[in-house]
Length: 130
Image (cartoon, rainbow, N blue to C red; front, top):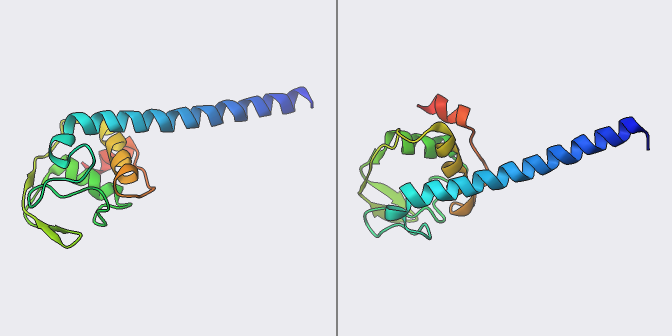
């Protein structure tokens, strides 16, 4: 293997490790933001509270809709929503005080962990939602 190929292989390995670390770091950050800001209403397991706070688990209203989740976090939501055939009529306060990176992390965490989605959102995309 030439020195150039060794260099390219080393760079590829470093980028791959960084990508894995970044994904893990974002998941950890998302979990921390969730525990601090969302868990009281949506519960540790994402099941919500009957008739008041909708579940995040299996919620097709949010699955792979990261911009919608981010907008709900930034602007809040009130009024009736139906999730999995059940009605909820609570109020989620706006949490625009959270920074874009924290919102991106928690949106990605909720979408993957609870809503069984795969899409993520970046801090720049969150900024555009504001």
